[in-house]
Image (cartoon, rainbow, N blue to C red; front, side, top):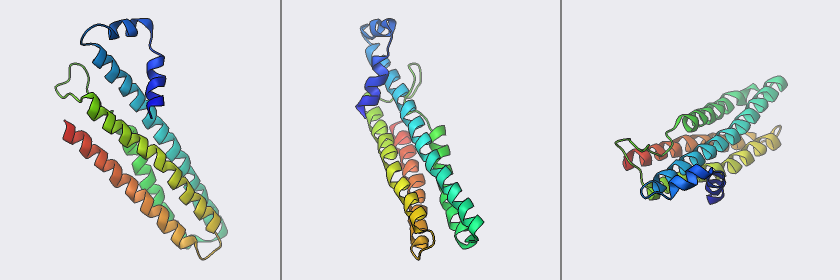
Length: 172
C-alpha cells in the first residue's frame, strides 16, 4: 500500500518539503503524511464496506418482497455486524500521535497499523464475493449456507478490527 503513501507525499507543497529537510522535522512530516494516508485508506475501507452493506440491505428488501422472510433475521445479523465494523473503522484512532502528544508511535509501529488497515481493505473483496454468492443462491437450497458464510465473515471483521485496537493500545 506504499502507493497510497506515495500519493500523499507527492502532493506536499514546497514549504512542507523544506521543513522536511530541517533536522528532527523529517520524521514528524513523514508521520503526518502517513496519518493522512491512513485516513485515506480508512475512508476507502469505509466506502467499500458501505457499498457491500447497502447490497445486503437490497437483498433483504428483495427477500421481503418475495415472501422469503425466514432469512431476514440472519441477513440482519450480517448487516448489523457490517455496520458495526464500518462504524469502528470510521471512528478509530489514526494510529498516529501528534508532535506534542505524550504517547509516541514510531514509524515501524505506524507501518504495522497501516498494513493492518490495508489487509482490511483487501478483505472487502471476499465479503463482496460472499454477498454475490447470496444473490446467486436466492431460490436455491444453498441460500442458508451462503448467508451463514456472510454472517461469519462479518463477525470476523468486527473481532479483527478489535484486534487492531489492541495493537494500537499495546503500542501506547
